[in-house]
Image 1 (spheres, helix red, strand yellow):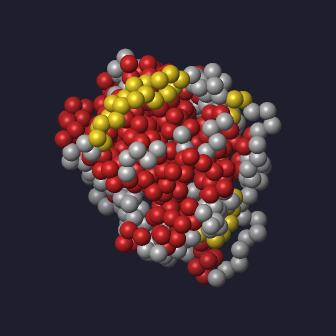
Image 2: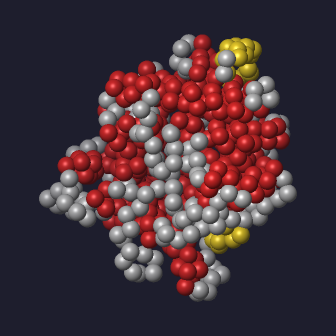
Image 3: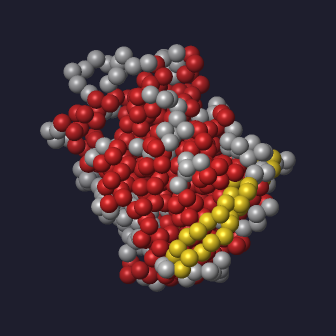
Length: 531
């Protein structure tokens, strides 16, 4: 950065500087910074191709046959997924989307958490509070104020849609305070590197947001998506859409780290499958893996391989690989965040397709493999030649839960890390009840969908409070992080996210580009005019 009189927000300049000299803060950071710059440079090239394709579609121009991706009509099947999609296209839910733009929580359990931990204003929104002041601390790189700084870097992911546009007018104190987070000239080199990685992330999001804002009145049909021609380019493009690059220095070296960063985005794409069709999301990982299909066999194959890639973060004995701890718990944290963020109504999706969880093959889900093991270089599914197999250590955990006046008791076999954490008071049993037990009762048809939804709606804000409070109460210890990751993996191994993804197709309806977030349409559009 050059000398200046005040804070400057220029993410593109930061990306250029990192690409030109990735080791400028020390040779030990060269590898991670080089990979980071390469990922975002490649991602911006794919995003530029998206812009060109959308521009050509609007003005009737020719397609570029060498483009790294293409926009294609959605392929469907005569199956349960196709039936839900047909309901969506028929105007289900009065044409409304269950994914909100931004929601606040006034329930007493969450207000109490806000008071206890000083979450005010923007940080008090469940999306931000759980995303930064829980998930940002979950990876546990440090045991002092430096971890809080990482949470602040994550916090800026949620602010990036507003910071630069706010600077177009008189900069307020709030904006100045936010930008001051970037100005730590005397900080340790490691924090400066983490800050620069985050700034590179914001360079990508800044370009994507400006493009989407210019198209925010362009209509969609809910039946189109994007397919890719290069596996590794797709991986880096998907990874770039993650908002946690302040932690990348803690990820495994080489392809494993890049795969893990991709997974932090891919797991969210399962939950957003329907809304992403609705809003023509140009970085939808699940549909990339299915080659633009929502036919159930293709979704099952993509779910299987998603689980194989998640399994690769664990040893064959069912423990998190030490060098992949940050990537593993942040991937799991993303999933937990989805359950409580007051934005994505995942349990309503699950209720529509819970029975499809029975379609998974538990034996096949024990395999593990990297992206390159699961997909060919041109991004077609394949099977690992000699896959590692995961042996999950489990034991029965007793439960007692009341759903709309009916009490259910029994035991559920879970990873020992979850059981031990519950027994020792590290993990609230409520997280197991709402994450595993009650969804299992619906899947087994022991309760009705209305009873399930009434229970999940009634305890939704409690769930949010349990998640955030439990992390802070236990100091985000390794035992806590491992238990959270194991609990989330139990959901994946049970097919929970397959059901959520298929159910989300109820939102695949006509709308507008990027209509799931507000936009200030004051930037140049892809065709050059000011909007």
